[in-house]
Image (cartoon, rainbow, N blue to C red):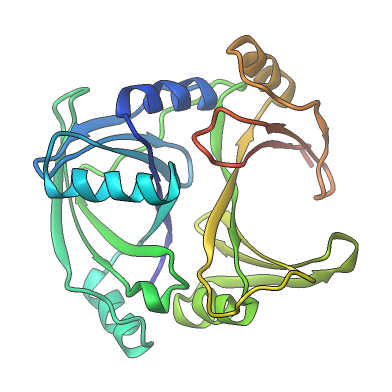
Length: 282
């Protein structure tokens, strides 16, 4: 039913500056830039296994007003997930049966200002009350689906994992595993880090759902998309590139996963905790 994470939506105050930040961060140009009639400007960065869609208010349309309200309430950051499916009607039927209360299937289209190309898709949104408060969509592409361009070794090639914070790990396990059908690869409690980890796999990346032990939290409160870990082929070269671009980055260090090395981008990411990772070849 779900074949991967199609894209993540990052809401930002202004599209040109946001696009410039992420072009410098990822080391690659946007693959799509467009303006919609209802008041949103978008820029899409396609990598090997997903895409990051920046979205900002543009003009005075209803969507521009809604985006402005989101930014005023919560600031910029990661706001929505869109999963990819090859059969939108089947997915809608299955998720209705599984209690996710999906909205009506709606068509969508966009024309890029970069090359004048057009894309078409259909999608629906699940009920926020059923998805732990994270805006969650399913999308089926019809024409013009984006493909990732080749990336140099110091640029981001793909998304290693996305981190979701939850006060209710059992609710999250039911949502991502039983209801959305992602593969639960690991459920581990690590007392040394005071955290329970649930790892789900889909489309060549990992959903890392974390519950911080010992914190007093209402289990009915919403989940949140917390951060992103981007994969690069040459971590040292990426580190040097980001330093040259003026980012505040940590020293390189060994990651928690054997054979991995990482560094942190400390700020300047539009409120998105960000890690870069590379894996030693086997």
